[in-house]
Length: 462
Image 1 (cartoon, helix red, strand yellow):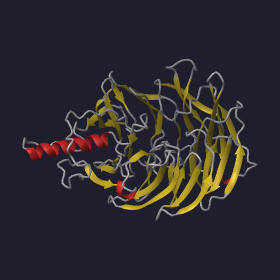
Image 2 (cartoon, rainbow, N blue to C red):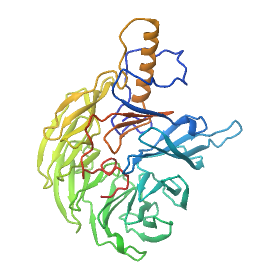
Image 3 (spheres, rainbow, N blue to C red):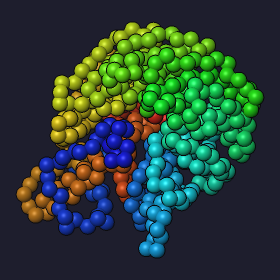
Image 4 (spheres, helix red, strand yellow):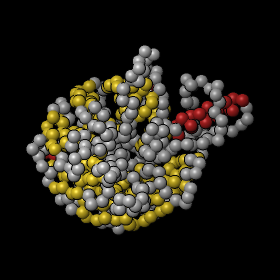
């Protein structure tokens, strides 16, 4: 998936062993061959040139607009020889489908040395960045700053959603905050009446149509999570607004787990059914009136839920996946034989999905595969040399070329972030390059949805 800093995130690529010793004499400035023998490469963009030549330390999940331009949130180390504050500069850059860097904008410098997931969104020609202490809105056409707000998020899982020209997020003082997307005017600051007196440790905000589903979680002294879901009508939000409906979770809703919404306006949440059991998890469905629709046992330690165009849900853990109907019926289950593990998936329009499987005992041979959405069984898997195949022959030139390709393979598979763009291409963000790998005519499924990837523009809305 994956990023050394976002190990649990997309694809679980960590630890790929290529089996070929990289040539230490290869110049780091060497570019990827323009005519590689592998047919997997679509383009490669060099991004360090727009970042003062610095390597990228961390990257957030990129988002893509309707033309498939990608917007990337990147962090570099900007500490000078006399700087004791460990400064890190944060940039946003736009890369087109021709690999050309359209613009790059430095948005902040900070001693905060991290970026977390899902803090970059695209909506109506604007890019909104959510950092720990600032929200910044940029013009997507040229990267110019439109507005900036000081905010407070003590914990990084307080996410945002954009819908109806409004930006929604939950601050750490238990408020649902609403800004005007156009100019940043604050439209509402609504207190959330949580169960304990502690500050909110994490929240999720997802939107379906004109309804916002807001989960807020805090933790008691015995480390039990208490959570509830408030449902608001977006076009009527003011600071005096009360939720239309509220659902209090009778289960342990760990905010690290996923929250999704289907086309019917029903929220889907992964919860631990019994707090002190490490294996007892459920997928629960909550409708727009705050009523529980169904509760279905799912594989243990699930972290992700996706929804396809027919509102079937897919949940996955490290070694098992399950397909569940819109009424809560388990349609199919597929387990992976230990020591294999299964990673995060992305639904495609030909009733298959991308996913990754590897050897859990040695973290070797983690490669992308294609799986059936019906049976959940693997149909094909990419070769060991991915994305660059090895060249046949034993000459010194060929040996040097293979060493270089092994180096490129390692760089891609240990990328800071992996994701899928609007056309279904695989994207890898490395310390100085962005790789785009062809989708083989398997585009993303229309109307499929997940908080991370199904809503490609990253708005957390459908």
